[in-house]
Amino acid sequence: MILLRMLIILFITCSFFAVSANASAVEADLQQLLSKMNQTLERGNYEGTFVFMHNGNVETMSIVHGYSDSGVREKLVSLTGDAREVIRDQDVLTCIWPRDKLVVIETASATHGLPSSLPSNLNEMAFHYKLTEVGQARIAGHDCTMVRFEPLDELRYGHELCLEAQHGMVLESKTFDVNGKAIENMMFTSFRMRETVPENLFQPSVHLNDYTWKTASVELNGELQPDRAWKVEKLPPGFSLQSVSRRLMSASNNPVQHMVLTDGLASVSVFISKVDDPGHMYKGAHKQGVINAYARDLNQHQITVVGEVPQGTVKMIGSSITYTPLK
Image 1 (cartoon, rainbow, N blue to C red):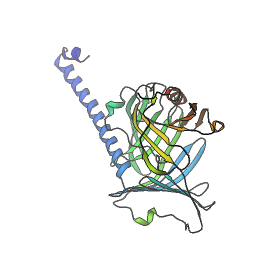
Image 2 (spheres, one colour; image 1 turned 60 degrees about the vertical axis):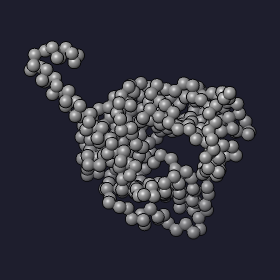
Image 3 (cartoon, one colour; image 1 turned 90 degrees about the vertical axis):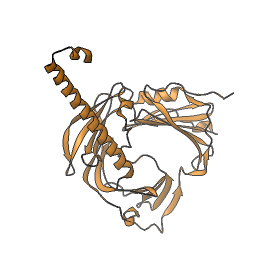
């Protein structure tokens, strides 16, 4: 098409180049906005209140997020339903349930209700998502640009983000199933950036002197060498192995191998651990909102695949896991 355009009269050629430049400018603007989003999600100082809608439930939560030389700190407090707080200090989560007077310490995972960072290079996802700017909106008093990631197959969900103009902060996010139906939504009702976040904003809102403390899923003996004999033989198109780790966890007597797969936008976790009692094996598929899980056993090992992807994707991954001893 480009060569054909170059053979047309100068007027049309100039018009074509103008359109191409505009398209490139739009793509460059989107890439710059997504880069800002990554920076703010990872290293921004901000606070706000957001509504999280999933599984027919509506939760309202406040969030404080800060970054310093020591790393990321974050505090989430539920404002509706059962009172609870989650305080993140780098890789450690402190979960507080005032009604039960219970504190649980565990390793950190993805932030509840907020997306993780996206790849800065949009070309990485071009074969599996169509990225478009779909309009402007005003959320929590801030102007934002609506960006949509439309999946090009049924192996991943669609996403729409409303990114605040100045810092790229996600003020609203929607997740769509393969039929285009919204299955999860997060939207800020108030939001502001801060220069710094005072220490007291990361402290628990209640006194914990008479609480019961428990530890769950925290490393006991640090990292172990991964067992490289475990393989995912059939990766969904566009997915690649991002990381492999193996740890002794307090919730299990045996090491747990953790494999993370990603297509640049969606991520899937694979957990593999030996089970001493076959009666405690889990099998089959499970769904909760945007989260799908698939479990099976292989050689007395429990294999569990969990991710914010359609059920068929976790089944494809889980069914293709093999164990081939290295020679």
